[in-house]
Length: 139
Image 1 (spheres, rainbow, N blue to C red):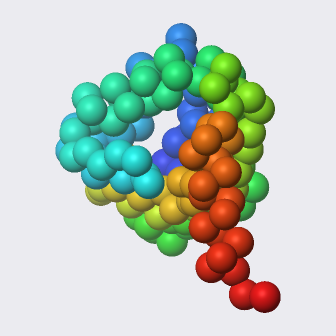
Image 2: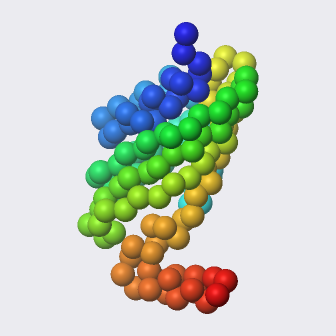
C-alpha cells in the first residue's frame, strides 16, 4: 500500500498545467507552503502558486531522488527542471520538509533551495549575483 508521501511525490513528479487540481486530493485546506519566493497558508493559494509557475515556465519537471518518511513527517531531495524565454533552460536541486495530518493530507511543505539559481539566469541581475557570490566565496 502506498503511503501519503508516495502519493504526493507521484503527483509532484507528474504535475503539469492540466492536472494541478490533483493537488486538491492530497493537501489539506490549511497547508503551509513556503519556498524562497512564496509563503501561503491555504490550499487555494498553494494551487495558485503552482498555476502561476506553469504560466511563467511552460516547461517544468520535478524529479524526486530520495524520500525519507517517519510517520507523518518526511524529507525529499529533488531536482527541478524548467525553461522560459527569459532564462532559457535551467535546473537546480533542493530539499523539502513535509508534514501530513492524521488523514494523510499534506499540511506543511517547506522547500529549501537557492533562489539565486534562477535569478542568475536573468541577464543583468545574473551578472550582479555572480559578482557578489564570487566576493563572498572562500578563496
